[in-house]
Length: 251
Image (cartoon, rainbow, N blue to C red; front, side):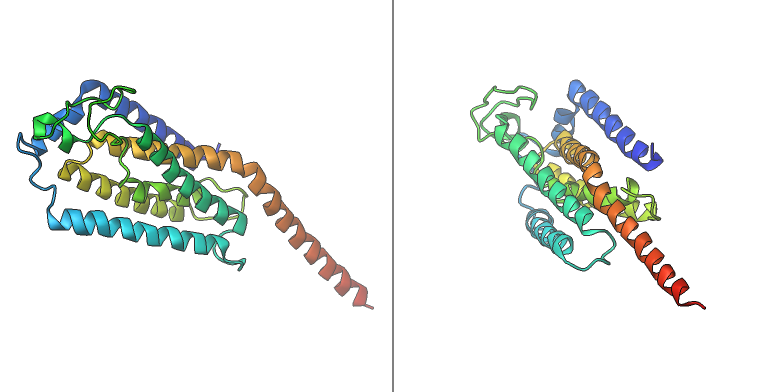
């Protein structure tokens, strides 16, 4: 097994275990009590957090998604990856976003700034209480804003879990992964400070996006390997034909 793939899978499993333990201990409520008060969250409408790091970051993520699809659909062959892999990366990024939104739409629990202990109107109910409506707007779990970065963790996979044995620098994949995680964690931290989401919501967003990326890439690898092998065989045949023509011209 590719060792970088091992790191990714083990990292995902470790995060899953840590997040489950975090949820079981009720640490979310402890953290939100540190940030909020019975009158609410002081930073909920702070300009830098609300306008720049929430609205602005969301708009920037939309631009990045458009750029990823332009990169995926561009017909040129030399854009770092075969077109089939670029398309797979783009599709998995969208699927990660969709998965987060599907879970979010099914969530019956409301956000911390709606909880009565922080000046809201509804009781604080765990996101594990599926089907238990708190009487508020709901649709709070997981963190949607964090997916602005987490959805792009799939960009790392072509380098960390390559389809072919051709030389690809794993460092490129780690840089892509670090960038996606940095943006996602920043977005999640901003929403926690504003009272929109407790920390575990960001962790679950990463677990969902990462799970979709890893599972989707694993399933797509067999399909991706076929055109890759065909390209390699075509290059071999082309070189063989060239050699044959050159040899035939020799006296």
